[in-house]
Image 1 (cartoon, rainbow, N blue to C red):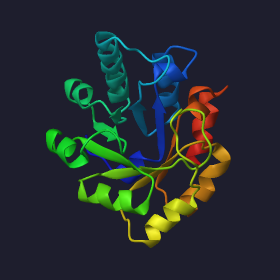
Image 2 (cartoon, rainbow, N blue to C red; image 1 turned 90 degrees about the horizontal axis):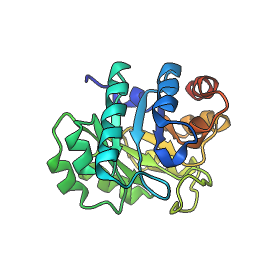
Image 3 (spheres, rainbow, N blue to C red; image 1 turned 135 degrees about the vertical axis):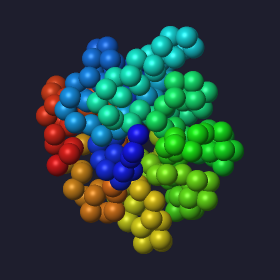
Image 4 (cartoon, rainbow, N blue to C red; image 1 turned 90 degrees about the vertical axis):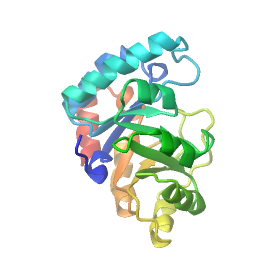
Amino acid sequence: MNLNVKEALSVYFICGTQDVVRPLDEILTEALEAGITMFQLREKGEGSIQDKEERYALARRLKQLCSSYHVPFVVNDDVELALEVEADGLHIGQDDGDASKIKGRLPSSMLFGISAYTVEEAEQAIRDGADYIGVGPMYATRSKADAKSAVGPERIRLMRDQGVDLPIVAIGGITTSHVKEIKKAGADGVSIISAIARASSIEKAVRLFKG
């Protein structure tokens, strides 16, 4: 998949079965129809699928669905799953292992994203071979039980001022009213969980996030 990373980060939908009250396949189909530019399967936490075979089957279905819309399919944290289903990308957090070693296990074509909370973490992500970084939480969020304190768009502006030039996607508590401010701070896109997953109209939500 020939990929412009900055464009792909524009409306980056992140979701797992624990985040939805309807079938995830159905939610993702609506989001793809509406125009999301990337999807990350984040199947973890309370209410998520624990059975390995069931989780892998879900990933394969969603990967095929994304492929049919030419949208990159990314796996959160799980290297083995990403490799098994030939995901388009893998995204890891700061506590998910040695990033440089993980990068070494991935095919050269697989997109590699790393979460970064500070300028120092962003600089380390660059050294570890990240293709993009996820910065946040921008605002208070209930989607992640272990979320850190909100940093706001100022953190992205600080990273840009300090010379961090990797593509950046903002995450955490983002609603459609935040997009303009986040982009102005230097982000290439926004990643969203509940504001799409639980939207009364997914089509309308995605359209507003696209701006």
